[in-house]
Image (cartoon, rainbow, N blue to C red; front, top):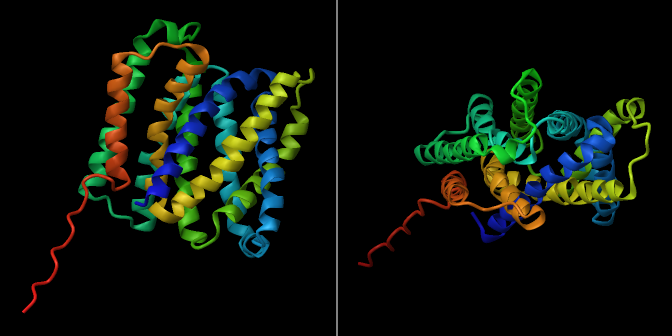
Length: 305
């Protein structure tokens, strides 16, 4: 793994860690469908001109069919599901459930693409999942983080929506590797966001909020579109190209860590010792999944005779 890939991974985790806070704040104003549409449409309006300036339009034109399905499974459907969950679940819990994505991706990649589940990758997946599970348990006993959350069928449906979203994400990463190898990340990002926007246009018009969201809400929605979809998906598809779908999906192990960090910086939430321990475990698991640990020893030079 190159240093640029690691930088992309950390930057992507930081962006997506903040996106859960934005979704939690925006879904009451827009609703899940309109919010998802604004997010992908804004990203498409940003990315398409950049695609044309880079001269990569032929890559989108020649691969539009697989990009349509990718736009549905990697953006439209999971955004709807996580938007629905945002009605009920706190942002931190939604980010934690999102961290099941690497497990879904690894399983689908193994069954569909024949990607090997190596000993170290399995250990990393298990360690990352253990860290996320620990954070989830800690959150579940932290009464202040669950204030107002009722453990009823609405909560169960919200959790199921999050887990279904991770399955779509897992399929999308494998789909990109299988059907879009060598396609520039910019073309994949622009194509998928455009396809998602077209798919959500009709449902968004039918469910548009009767009260127009405030300027503050629109500002946050634009930030969500530009950063969490536009910039983020350029990074994500580049990571899929460089380190594979399971390695790229491991970013979701880091998202809860960054979500907690943003909560501390923006909302003044406390950072506790269990959170730090869980974060360290997650970082170690991610390092195993993406190949940073264990580092291979360089082969000794051949002996000179």
